[in-house]
Length: 373
Figure 1: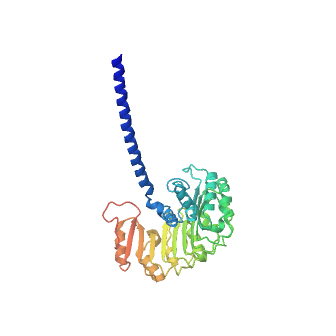
Figure 2: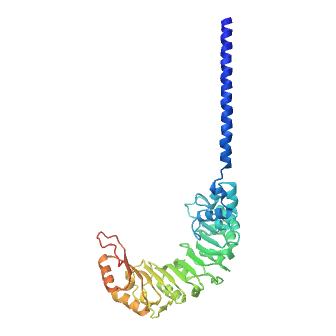
């Protein structure tokens, strides 16, 4: 019994000694921990030391280039920048330019309902303060538009870029003063009843317009102010009517309707004295001979078109067009169905420095892609 007690006393003393050793080690580690923490606390991450104005500019460059809109939520949304830390949140919320481009869609690929998108857009537009706005709305249902219209139209005086694919009934609600509007892109929802749209007139800065579908025949704009015009799926006769009112155009892109009637040359020219670039696309099977020759474009330097616009005698037709306009083309791109005809263009127009061809179909021979470069 006595031997057992003696053994326990030695064991207890050993344990106490080991505890003292561990306590000294723990004390040493705590001192080391405090020193390391002090050094870390003293370090300032460079991004944290940047002035708020610089961080704000970096944030702006994280988003798609204005007027292209970022998503309302997710990795590429400015809302993410507001969730990193309190300082970044304050900077993001005080940077109106982060919230000035908004895209709303009723597309089934988005899991945000239009009502929820409308509420988010209201918040964004408040945060954008007095910035001009870029608005992109694709709403295929009148009900969806009604959920959005109040929030969006309240800020109509700040619209700078407006892209809408909506029922024509919705277009009736947007007509009004738009003093900052510079670019307008309108498309109609397919199979919708066509309403008469009041003239869009109070747009003193409007310069760029894109119209998709039959809306070109339904809308009245200050055509003479435009410098850039794009008409998608348009009737050539309607194009002619509009183009005769656009004397200040610099860029023109016409994508003609695949269900159009054969073009009947009215015998009247389309004088566009300032036009520098012209793109002609035709998805129909009807003849458009004479359409190109209607243009008188002395300042034209870039021409992109499909070969059908030149008619049967293609080389002669293009020479006639250039001679009539008196233009000095620097760049010509022609869509054709075979490479062999392309070589005849290069021989006929050696003075055009950039003459290239786009294949309508895939070719297997080595001549499928060539130009004068």
